[in-house]
Length: 298
Ligand SMILES: C[C@@](CO)(OP(=O)(O)O)[C@H](O)COP(=O)(O)OP(=O)(O)OC[C@H]1O[C@@H](n2ccc(N)nc2=O)[C@H](O)[C@@H]1O
Ligand SMILES: Nc1ncnc2c1ncn2[C@@H]1O[C@H](COP(=O)(O)OP(=O)(O)O)[C@@H](O)[C@H]1O
Image 1 (cartoon, rainbow, N blue to C red):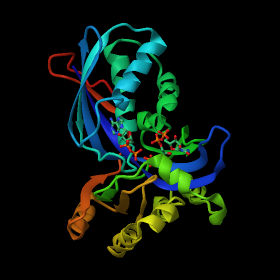
Image 2: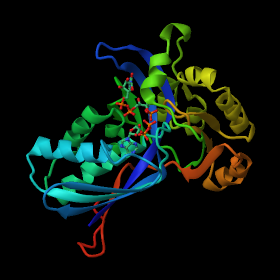
Image 3: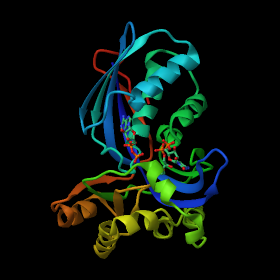
């Protein structure tokens, strides 16, 4: 049995540069892996793909785990199956890339379990056809995403910073937020370029302060409580705070996990959900179960 930790992401910076011919938006974004993770297990099975889900509610039908597994089978011609368990810890439709993380974990784990030997670049390309955040979830760490967000350049890592996540009870669909975005209403700004510059200079404090997400305006206009929440997060003395992706989760960064935890209690009020974690340097992690080769597989 193979166990996978599928880590969530936050967008430390996000610029939208325009609309592409394929209907997607041209973005420049700085993505960061965080410790909040779904846990998946994979065992060989004959005669198909079987999925069992627990934790955060997410439909089994058309689940990104099954879509990723099926596309790997199709791309390689592999005939065997798998029994997959998904313990869903990452909230759904939250801007944290949970579905993408699960798909990335599935591609990496089944490639290993089935002994396919596909290189990681191949898995990244396959993943990008399912969802634009999947290549990043495979690679992990800190990275710049261009194009649809899936043309990646790894960036110098941040130290392990404390991350406080606060989310309303509702979720938001990525496509809806992008649909409401009007480029003409946004003065040009380049938070992702600026952040990249400071990361390359080794100035992570300046880097995190230079972030920003142009989609905040769209989301905050519709949900003014999220604008107030961002102000409250900043008022705690956080290094920075912002909307992750298309939201609705807001993140705040602190110098340590303990400081993030210390500030969390102020937000554990009715109507909000709270998580405390850290930034991490890796994406998916794989481990063999006790009855198999006792080695960590990645
Ligand atoms: C906004 C971001 C930022 O990291 O994350 P989330 O907030 O969803 O986590 C990503 O671009 C989301 O990635 P992902 O959730 O994989 O999106 P996909 O399934 O590929 O796309 C969903 C839909 O969003 C719109 N979309 C997505 C990406 C992009 N660059 N331009 C778009 O217009 C398209 O309408 C697309 O059909
Ligand atoms: N394994 C999965 N985990 C989360 N969402 C999934 C999964 N499979 C399919 N989905 C669907 O993908 C959509 C986006 O989910 P998610 O990745 O959690 O959000 P976001 O794009 O905001 O980061 C949801 O509508 C959900 O129903």
